[in-house]
Image (cartoon, rainbow, N blue to C red; front, side):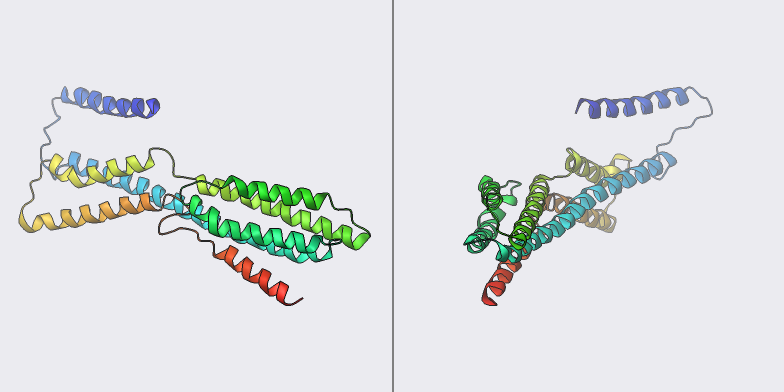
Length: 255
């Protein structure tokens, strides 16, 4: 924050120093016209700055949500693959592992997903996955087929844990600090700049400014509303995990 403040003060100081130097040049003239070169240049740069900041505020959450959506499909598919591979485990392990996978996916959908909208994860989810991996790792296979099945299940559970860690990061992800405040500041300056430059619009001339203010306000609200990958209009839903539950039921019904 201190660096931001110093950079702003340095830029303002550079403008003040430049104005003082050029004021001493006799050929330099006053520029009080709202349509003059100073106002035109400042207005164009201010608009460009707002568009840059606004684009970052939209693109960063958009790409985060898109990556989070793909990751949920990877995690749910790994759970389905583990469900399939569990059929070759020894003894009663197939039923126990499959029941644990169903419980884990149901837990993610019903209990963990609402917390993710707040940027949090339920600690029980990781504990369940660690417990299941420990139980599978403790199995004693009898033969190559059971050994291969155990290795396959552990591989898919490792993929689930990796995807879960990424989902944890996606839930906590947010745009860079201060970006929303900078978007609000530059948006407000774009709105009031004509008045600061000396223009005094009246009547129908106010309509474009009112429309611009309304659209800027909506855009700034949208950039705040989509700042979380699992909340807002771009929210990633648990559809992939619901699909995994349906796949579990289909696999169980076909055996």
